[in-house]
Image (cartoon, rainbow, N blue to C red; front, side, top):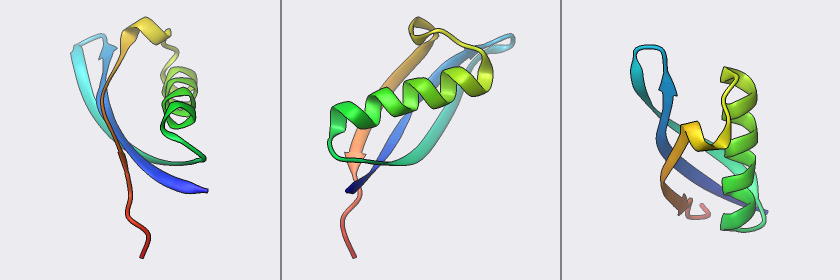
Length: 61
């Protein structure tokens, strides 16, 4: 399984907040879905309130 770094922003009471997280996923689409689920669950947001700006695969060491 690969690691992906996903960055973006989400809507909060004070405007938008930037975030960057790393997730394990077999491909980029699954990585996006996991970030939507994790950020949405953690902050009580719907998918339309989360903007994913970049999904990048982390190079294996």
